[in-house]
Amino acid sequence: MRGTILFISNAVADLGGLPSELESRGFGSLFADSMAKALPLVEDGAADVVLALVDLKDCSAADVCSQVQETRARTPVILLSATDSSEQMLGALRARAFDFFCFPLDVDAVELALHRALRQQELREEVSRVRTALAEGAGFEELIGVSQPMHELYDLLTRAATTTSSVVITGESGTGKELIARALHQRSRRATGPFVALNCSAIPESLVESELFGHARGAYTDAKVARVGLFVQANGGTIFLDEIGDLPLSVQPKLLRALQERTVRPVGGNQEIAFDARVISATNENLELAASEKRFREDLFYRLNVIHLHVPPLRDRTSDILLIAQHYLEHYAIFLEKPVESFSKACSDRLLAYPWPGNVRELQNCVERAVALTRDSEIQVQDLPEKIRTHKRSHILVVGDHPSDLVTMNEVESRYIVRVMQAVGGNKREAARILGFDRKTLYRKLERYNLDVPKSPSRTPTT
Image (tube, rainbow, N blue to C red; front, side):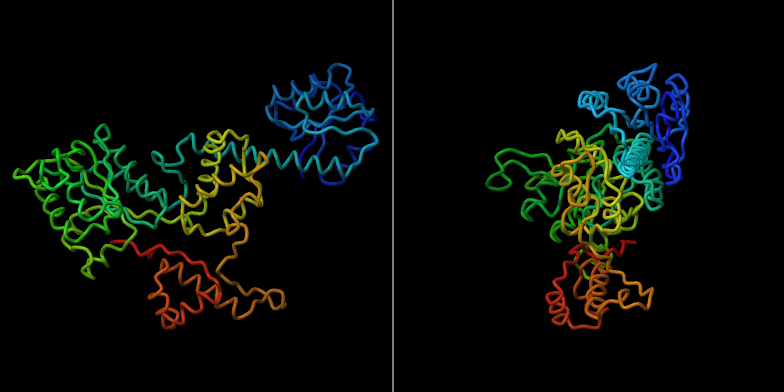
């Protein structure tokens, strides 16, 4: 059954053989000879599409459309007319009819319109489900996701929020580590206090200590006034140290002392200043590995990593992709003032097939671009970036013996190289070891196959 059509006509004979023809093509049918009889069927949801004659005894074409919409919003109405009248066609458009046909009917064209109407209904129901999920809290603060990995993360966040222990958040670039930190702050007893953030990789090494701990007047040439550091600014709240793995080694022992003593000494100052702030750090590095290689102080790692939260990459929670995409679609539709409502089925399939090496940040960028460029109320495949439109999975399954099912050895090798590079987060030394190549051979093959692989670090979580 492809869907149920409610025919509204003064008599079944007025419809010719249309009902029986559409029934033979798999559609269900109901019949009403007046709007009084039709509206209860619409209200009960018995009909997916209304197909009505314009010359009903008790109702005009405009009234058919308005009464159906008032009874069950968004039920498509297709109007049929015995005469080819431009005035009637304009009236149907003004009444917001889904489509308009004149006798003699082209049944193929009517069937195509019905498929379009049913597909529109499916998309609207899908959008409605997504909106309901978002409204009912399909997430945690500003985080969005209903997948099992995200539910496990929400559980950890809920438990961690009741403590004041230091937290390290790990995950690939673009997974939303700062959103996690803000969510943790908002659910904690410090929610009314400040949330102070610092990207450790964005501050010159010579200024990091001053940013964190402050400085006294005259501490250096440009220090014309004393400055309070971020730790003191975060009193009563949370300080978030993003990209903590890039913190200079020269500053790490001073940060360790500050965390142990809960005091800071401004650069050029003589007195210790107490602070009361929870410390949350984030990194896309494996800090434990960095500590074993003497690139990060081991004692600082253990001081920071009291509670560890790992944010799963988007490719490991594909059930969240369309939910997040719809969220951003609605945001950018309002921001860009465009009447975009949903994604086409083909477009949704491409979004689900793509591995999203840039994670949620890349998906957000993709949706903004699509909303900005589309000329339709529905995002189409051609609105997506080329690399998403043309993406091929790196996994190869040999499931048949026909030549068309098989690929060349070059194709097998190139896809496997991509798969290994994804698994190690773009670490060419590790990829070469797994593949059994020397690094020069790996570089040569990457160039030969023109491979674009992720530059993000390994997914191995900090423990």
